[in-house]
Length: 397
Ligand code: PMP
Ligand code: GLU
Image (cartoon, rainbow, N blue to C red; front, side, top):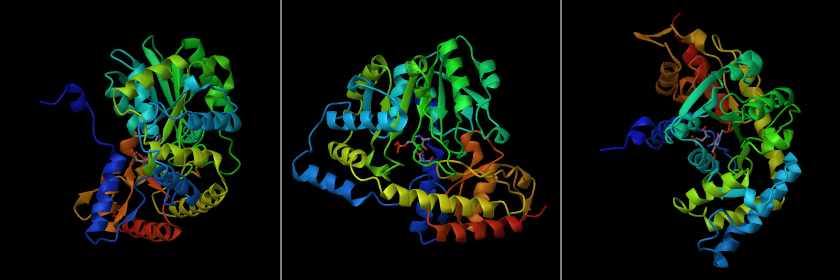
């Protein structure tokens, strides 16, 4: 009954774990969730006020498919100010979240026979969005010793005549690492030389630590800019996950194709959310410093604690809000008559025994790790790490 396309894909594992943890909580179980990557901060009041105002003024109808001009202009100004990128309105499209922007790109660019290179570990939706468009994901392994940046020579070896695009994500979900300028320059040179596109997902751009600089690969020259589609959104930077506002910036031909696809699928993102997004981008940004400080504090606490747990090791990430500890040394240990032999076994064991939700690394293409989101209170982080320590401590070698 179902299409071949529908049979090829699976539900988002991060959202599935979140649902499971929420269902356990609803049934009265005290679950601590390091599962989903969603800021635990509320959307700032001045942004909500802009939404109330939009509703009161009757701004509740369809808008232009790709977003209202004041929002496009606010995005254009943001890209110029933060990233040194100059775009026109024809090169911007606003969609229902960055996930939707990525999906529109996938629909506009990927097709049967195309290969799309995805450095692993990767964010869960990239491979499935490639598969949904009947193209082939090509995974390229990255290493902790390189801060999980793809090695240019490894990337080069996986390029073929069919390579259509490379999906880059810096700062990265799940690893929490960022790309440096030197590596980005090498990747940009390769994209230009082999003539493929770069889809650059920069949704965690505002969350970088220890003086790390966020660099958009599109800013490295005119030739690479012509081949890059920059993806960003307000979910993480402005704690607006539920408002569903993301955007893409890129060559006008591609943006126009995305617009056509959007006009035949979802139409415009919610009118009220768009007004709120203008305020988010144009209004005061001071709350961000507080959010950033808190994430930074939690990051250091969580990573330091994880490194004291026998069998785990975790590098200090430089961005996003994820810790990605290596847990492979725990595989082979026993809990009663069960053997923990994978990241999935470990995540399930932690959920059932310690009532702590984490995401198994296999969901991101690397079974040697698990992911913990620290977008949760420091108090929960303290209790959660305590529970993990106890559960891991009970495993028999
Ligand atoms: N890209 C990455 C790497 C993410 O972690 C997320 C988080 N859900 C998204 C894109 C999509 O964000 P949203 O659709 O909420 O804008
Ligand atoms: N990006 C978040 C995560 O990875 C949200 C979940 C999702 O959209 O898949 O947890």
